[in-house]
Length: 440
Image 1 (cartoon, rainbow, N blue to C red):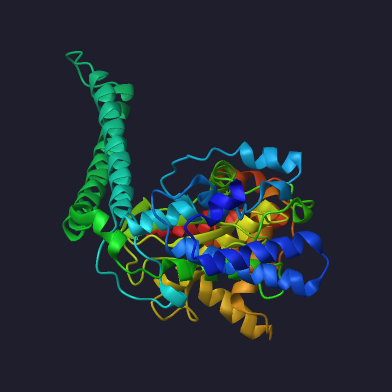
Image 2 (cartoon, rainbow, N blue to C red; image 1 turned 180 degrees about the vertical axis):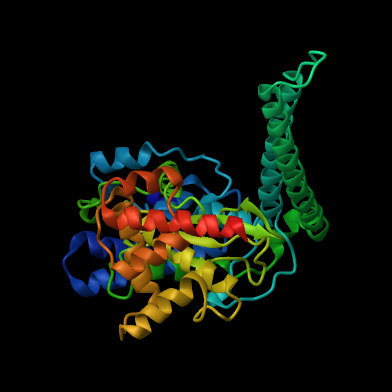
């Protein structure tokens, strides 16, 4: 009944073609023409179901869109249990399976993605963009409250002894002055985020008629097809349907929980990756992560921001669900996001300044013909997996660029400085730069 429910309400002609292609494949899996026919017709079925998705879809249709699961018999017991163990409902603020993403777009919870990777301005602000700023605002309020508590503790420790203050009391007064300065600075950040939040709420008109989006013609299904194809690659395995035949080398399935834990793990190393500057104030604004089915090996950034909205627009980052190496798949996506975001924020000067300018000029100076994104992503993966552990794998000049622009947290830098002279030298340069900056 699973396969039949996937085809339920599908146009009769398409359903017949899928049924025939499936029967032919099961009779002769090794026939290349039969396999090609099956691949093409299942892609057509996938596109139809994507375009016409609604909240009343059968679970089987959702599972086909989510995993490529067309026929449970194509999975052995081990792989079936692996899929079955993944929760069907697992709400995460910024991570989506394909079926969830399409429903969110149709309901107006998130904006459509740029089609064919063309940057276009947005006319509306999606509710989830507003919610991300609400989170940042509440975090900043908590930071202010924490400083207030510290300040009260210091002031309460100052005792009037009827004589000049002792050195210990004067030290407390100095601490109180520093806390007041910090409190004023954090309050300014609260003001900036509060203003931006109110602006976003005013601009967002989706909540009033969210359900109307179901009647609106959208092209997000075409974007999803492109995303899946790009994750597979020109020479990759275009067999969309989930089968144990192609899962032999897959050690980890890219479920939401795993993707989230890996992103959090890598963010501890590249701790500024999701940082966004708003009038000098830093907030963390993660992009949307869309987990796509198929046997792609590399993730990528579809767009770093929504159109031209570099302040509140959240990008789209694509993660393949069944890669051979989940760490490489996710890091390739994060590296691509890093590079594309830096390009956009350079506002047309990306070949001249900052992270992208330094990498570009290194390629030019050394007559390296490799594309900048491919060159960068390979080294970004090594930076996170190897160099953060003291294993030197990238070029000296690139290491110095990354050390400045994709800096490790202080504890990692300090640890590395004790491992090798190379890192120790970079760490000392760091200290000198900070000292010079403070003296300006």
